[in-house]
Length: 219
Image (cartoon, one colour):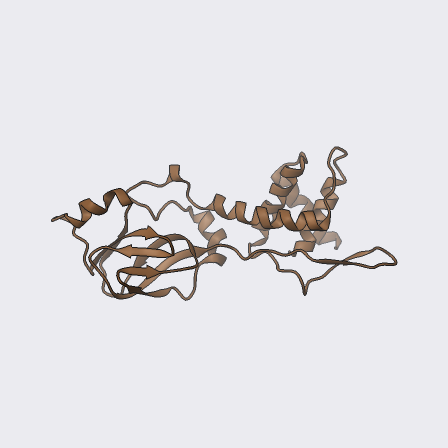
């Protein structure tokens, strides 16, 4: 399902609602960009869903599946001065090394107590780190190679069209466009968010039904 498919579907739905105003292609482009990020952040665990003892957890299986296009690969990084640099990471789930037995991502409030702990001291085999800008800061470990499971921000979508100056017929400029990286179900979630912003009264299930009809009947 392309960006143009979503635009066509939006027009079909809007035309069914006399109180809604259809948007221009430039407005749709901006909405795609905004809702692309909105959906991404909604899939990540909120502060309320994260236990302070388990900083890197909270993503459900369903969200994990939806977010899979944004897993950072390759996922092996080297630590320098105790920092594992993962510059494109937006959300880090877990990390480990070839020789580690356990690994923990802790909150800043726990750093001092873990550094002085006799029971669970940070070591190269029992890794402890906390999130910093651009990666993970390790405790009591300065070097090494680590596997980091993290998500990047989705690529910015671009919706580009061309209009025939004579007939005024709009056609999709796929060469100048950048498609959403989400699966089709999530693309419809993005369309649903756009329609909500437009004030269109419609259920999410109806969006799916209309999309299936568009695919069946033809574009």
